Image 1: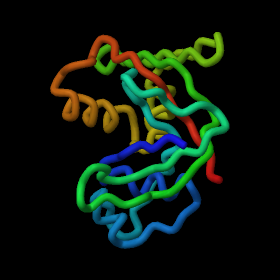
Image 2 (image 1 turned 135 degrees about the vertical axis):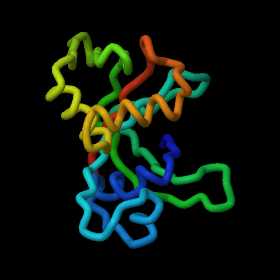
Image 3 (image 1 turned 180 degrees about the horizontal axis):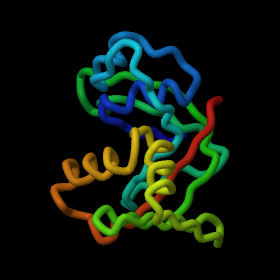
Length: 152
């Protein structure tokens, strides 16, 4: 099993993507209002690092706030795919290398679809998150892995 930690804004979208109920405290973590649509999140983008990432078929454990006193488990999933990804936030481009099959997103509608799969409303929201989180770093390109999952 491989565990991943997420910010509060992703708790409700991950739970929706896993088919789990979303409680009021999950909505509050992400700033969601009652009745607001929560888009399912079934993928995450991660940097290459010292530890290995999940492999297809493995169980993923999703947590909020790992290594903090308020840590809790969001849910489990089954890893469905792991692909290399290059992401140009300023260049408006995403390139995914999935088993020697290159997938490129450049059109606004394609970028919006990709962002929605990652739990955002659109590319502009995803782009704003990346700019805020990375202080202008990794903008040309960020290279890492795209991990996708399905509910258990």
